[in-house]
Image (tube, rainbow over all chains, first blue to last red; front, side):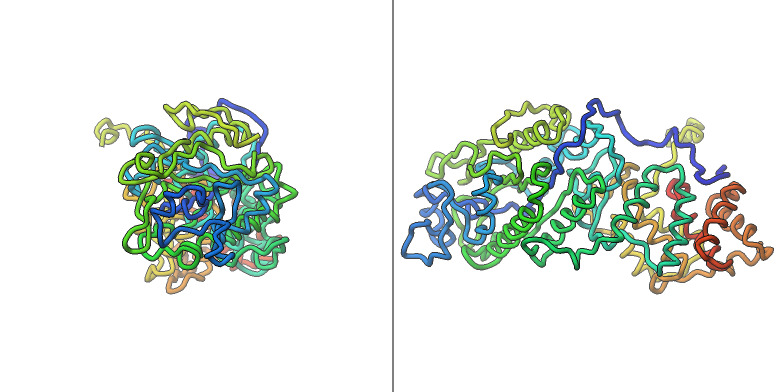
Length: 398
Length: 159
């Protein structure tokens, strides 16, 4: 029988499946951008020093930086003499020259199914095959590290529901918009609702935290938010802008997960114009705006981009690219060994490609994330976050 | 099934309501009439829009997955109680008329009995009335706000 509010005996309430074995101060805020649909990374960070790239992509290939037969604005932007950015990724050049952007090429997961569903699931769970925990790798990171932070906005999935990578024993929030984090009504009605909620949640830490954050966020409005470089007027731009606002508002944000869809470009992918260049422009402009806006926080901020797999090295008959294997990750932050393309380049010549003609994976994505977890997030429990995997620590982060 | 066969219902632990459970239990308890279209928007905010889970395994049945997203539940509770959800109506007064003695205290006891099976503790009830009245609510507003807060309360999130 329920006689009082709060009426529930909380001793049985499931909170954590297991107590975090690590206690550490909060590390960086982690922003994970997932490019859903398997982004064609070979056209994002172009291996312009690789002749085979141009043989395999006669229509879609991005011209070399010194190719005078192409318009200058259509050529790759050279990074290191071998790789170059797609021209629509040019907004990231400042972060690159500031050495706050690192690229890990030919990076990815061992799964060779080339199935979006399977690859995304395994990658978000941080597992090698279907066995292993159903929770997500970020969820296990949160569960294995006690940072003394009980904020309901400790981890936020930007969108209508939390990403699979966030699932686990620590509650996370889905946030479409900061504006959604308000109760409706006039000031008097708000005060009445708030006072009643204060009573019914008087012994509930999460409820009290939610009330406190509601007060903080009430003062924030994405429409009037000012940044050094404007964020793109897109869902991705809004997600990054709101992430920036939450970080600056100090509401306890540790992880923000953002999805960017539309990268499954089988048909009419476009080389310098079209669907994929448009996506790259949005991605680069968003990250560049975030980088400029968060300069004062860059030492406590790490942003990672990833995709479930890469695309076929050769273009297809529909001026698109099919599902491939090796992908690419970008890491943006103040403690990144940036201005460098990391990882071993496997090459694109015959005999160097794998499967039906795909870029090989030479760096496991879990190696990069393990570095982020241990070096920047103060969590050494990589054996629980990525079970049955022994990460090889690289030199992407300081 | 095992629990029932072993006569072990007493050992079954309550579960945190998934958004659909939460919304439907509130609609049922308030005898709401709705075309359900606008309810789906609230379910979307709460994270459980029908037929929209991205993978075939369906929405999680784990309590922990749902506990971190209180605000959309609060919004639903207050929008519902204020009849602000499109094509979704209840009549709180009519619902309470049979038992109402006209006092706010009794009406809150009635609504909490409806929602929880028994009246809330008297001290808590009086604290709720005091706090809402101090914030400027008249009797009708107080009943509405307190009823909304009971639906939004931790106790109503569990089944």
